[in-house]
Length: 611
Ligand code: C2E
Ligand code: MG
Ligand code: MG
Image 1 (cartoon, protein in one colour):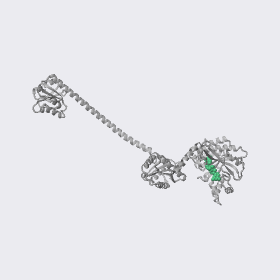
Image 2: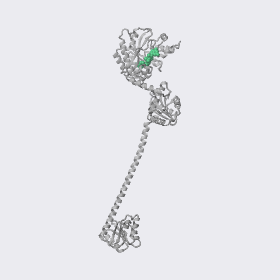
Image 3: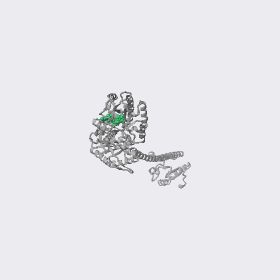
Image 4: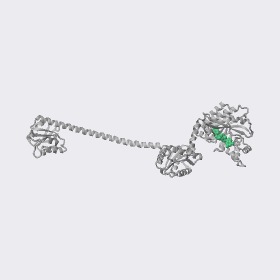
């Protein structure tokens, strides 16, 4: 048999029969139907034939010497190359053919001899088609598998890409989070992160009785002065230097955060008692007290510190921080470069201040503010020269409040400007009414206290003009009392406003002189009319039997600058006598009168007192 002659387009059938005649008949029959037919007389030949080319179908005789058809079939079925080649058994009618055994061994059909030609062809064809269909299914399955595989590969790739993307996004997110939670200048945690840490500490303290912590709130003293005068770059440099010094006072595990501007927060963890926190605060104040040597300047900067013990009963970390902040304000008020430990009474006071602030916002419109007037006496005549308007607040619940109890709050909140303008307006109105009383002394003056902030408002002059116009008072009867802080501002706006005031013949008085920082030469540069000596100097005067303290010096310098002098807080006849002997021009104080309600002023004047 020459296998090379096999036509690859044709189906290949292997006939195995020990009888050559049978082989011939069957093969020529099938060859005529267009199949490649190969013949084998026994197992050995069949095996060789399959080794050469695998047939598409095997026709297998049962009765063969040595290896019979069943055994041949079993062998083919157990050989993986031939296992799925369909095997059709051929049996002679007189053979004892066991169909069940044949099928069990893997045969797919059987043909009985003598052949019915058509039957053989149909059965062969059926099996070939069946096989073809099976192969097709197999092929399709493999193709499908291949496609699934490649899709899976694509998906896996996409997944990997996605995972890489997720990782890089996570990095980005972490980075963004880092930016959001840290201060860009110092790199320290910011308020948000600090509050989170505080929250964690709070939770820990609730879970573990042994865990103790404390919070420090630190605010630089007069940082604004450095920032405003030396510029933001220097301010930034200073803040970084401060943060380094603070860090050097802390233990590993403590948290330092920048809470904003010149404020820092410190979380001390795993401490034994409040003393540990106090020691840290003391060390901080000590370290900060050393001069900062910056690139261009040497700067001195200290801080006020509020300390709050990490009590686990706090509902929120914000409250912990708030109370540390309250304590810090106390430290600042008590004198700078110091620390204060929070106690609940401070909270109550802070709440009260807040309430006062809220009430104060409505005080003007509710007409709760009233003005008392304190007479000012001209010492050379002993008669009333004018009155100083001093505001009070008739609080609906707290009763009559002194300015010292609400002016600082008004200053802090900016409400002071409205109050001052209201006082100016009301006092001028009052003066215009008094001027109509015949008993009123001529050229009675009215003194009004104006806070420093007003002098940075360009529209102040317009407001003054409007009030003078509305009340028709003579502007030369008006005296404005300013404090040294106005001069300290010394900006062009302030200067312009002061000049405008002078052009209107309004008098300018420097109030509480001697308590501020301004030097006499500084005062000289401004067109002031009078100096009002602070009552602390007048009080002390009687302790210096001979020299009378600084009062004589102040009076003589004021006079040399052609300013008049007013003595404030005169309470005794001795003080009055001494002031007269020093040629002091005016005086006011309880010796003459307490500040009076408007109705009392009329009676007071009617009594025509004289000293
Ligand atoms: P000031 O302008 O220096 O007013 C003098 C203060 O000394 C007044 O206190 C007055 O009652 C008090 N006083 C007067 N004579 C004596 C005395 O013989 N002995 C003692 N111990 N005290 C005396 P008052 O009315 O409580 O005002 C306190 C401060 O509040 C004022 O000090 C002033 O700085 C501020 N102030 C009052 N009214 C206003 C206002 O309308 N606007 C502004 N911005 N501040 C005001
Ligand atoms: Mg005053
Ligand atoms: Mg005063």
